[in-house]
Every structure is written in structure tokens, then in C-alpha cells.
Amino acid sequence: MPLRHLVNLSDLSQAEFKGLLERATELKAQRTGHEPLKNKVLAMLFEKSSTRTRISFETGMIQLGGAAIFLSPRDTQLGRGEPIEDSARVISRMVDCIMLRTHEHRTVELFAQHSSVPVINGLTDQSHPCQLLADMQTYFEHRGDIRGKTVAWIGDGNNMCHSYLEAASLLDFTLKIACPPSYEPDQQFMDKADGRGVLMHDPKAAAEGADLVVTDVWASMGQEEEQSRRELAFRGFEVDDQLMSRAAQDALFMHCLPAHRGEEVSASVLEGPQSVVWDEAENRLHAQKALLEFLLIEDHPLREH
Image (cartoon, rainbow, N blue to C red; front, side, top):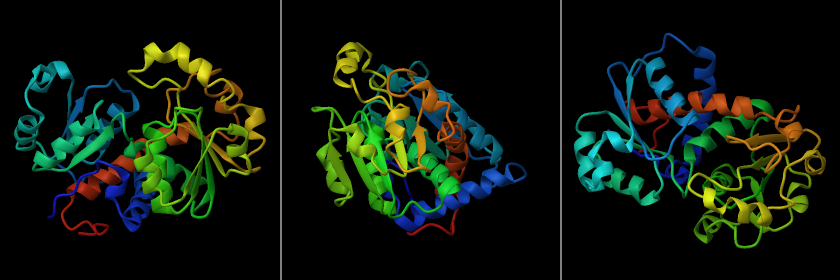
């Protein structure tokens, strides 16, 4: 079976991406009694703490009949300076899949280059492909195909914004990005979007007529020392009821969580009728189960070799 990884969302074809979303919804309905990964082991390496990533991957492996091993930097030689290449070679000889949640994107890339088993990016400072699987599953469940729709990204041009740009290219939707000056996404991801990313600095203009409004925290993990400066820069970028009123009448609101009520999103929007954040969070489990099947089952029907 050809070795496949998920380092960025662009590692998938459009057909594979859509197929994973459909399969995730099937698994969500099925829940129990399906154990195709019996005796398979997922190693989960965390340099960044997590709620949703750890619980969803660990639960997913258990529900699919396998097991997961949680490893913090204190639990491996990787945290003591062992070369990433050596860790990848050793760990991949003992497990069936590796998931990393880390700072440097290069760490995941090196693991994938030197691993003999599939490697999954559970989040880096550059991208967050697993969250986009859950987000798009949620949109498809609530509103159908996102092709031709408009998504408004309000806030920092961060790892989530980068993955949304990749999703825009794969699923053919327009992404209007409203960021304060100097907080724009990396140009390489704008280029990947093939013209589907529209950069602006006015959140009201970005939200106008949008079918989906998405935001994230203003200071991501590791940027806490920038909190005060970012609060000033992002003033006026809160997704509140007034901003949502500019979106389409049936627009959805998403946030990958954790959320800071009163900063990037108001409590009334987060808890309001247009918010699907709790479905979005739950779908991390189902989307990642579909991904684990895709990467670990020989001759998976979705695989484009």
C-alpha cells in the first residue's frame, strides 16, 4: 500500500476530501460495532497542549478497535534533543500511525519524510488540516455542498486561515479574509488558493453576504506575550451580532475553540442560533476516524494512489 500522510490539506485530492467528509458522517451515524483498526496503534506526540485533538484521536482509535499512546515532550527523547529524523525512524517501527501536534511545521515534514507509517499533522503554527475536515463536515451536514459559497474569515491570518485557503481551492469556494495590517496570511497559502482568497482589512466588508463566518483567538498558543498588542490591533474585529447581521440570513458561525467571549466573538454569537461550534468540535472525532481509516486500511476505496 503506497504510504500517505496528511501534512497539509493539499495532500488530499478534491475527491478524497469530499469522500472523507461523506465517510465521516456515515461513521457519526454508525458510532459502534465497526473495528477495522483492531490491534493498530496510534502514537500521539504533543508539544502543544490540547483538549479536542487528544480526546478525538484517542477516542477515535478506541472506537475503531485500536489503541493510542499519548507522548508529551517529557515522555520521549525528542524533548531531549534526539534528531527528529531518528525519532521518526524508531517510533514508526513500533506503531502504525503517528500524529503530531507541534510548533514548527518542519517537524511534521521531517517526520513524514523519515517515517515508515502514515504521519498526521494534528496542528502546527503553519496549518491545521484536521480542523478543516471537521469544519467542512459540519458545513456539509447543515447546508450541503460549499462549492460556490462565500466564507468570511475574520481575524488573524494564522494556521487556521492557511488551511481555509487550501480548503477554498479544493472545494471551490471564495474565502474573504479580513485581517488587521501586518496580520495577513502567508503569501504561499494565498497563492495556493488559486485566486479564491480575497484579502481585505474591513471585517464588515468580508462578512457581507457570507454563507459562513469563521474566527479564531487573536493570540494563538505561544503568542500570549503579544496579547495586549494584539488586542489593540484587532479592535473592531469581534464577531458580534451586528457583524453577523451583514452575512447571509442563513449563515453559519464557526470557531475551532477554545473561544474568548468578548474578544474575537461575542457570547451572543457563540451561543446563538447560527453557531454550530459544538457540532464542529464533535466532528473532530468523526472526521479523524474517517482519516485514520483512509490512511491505515489497505486498498481503501477513496485512495487515489
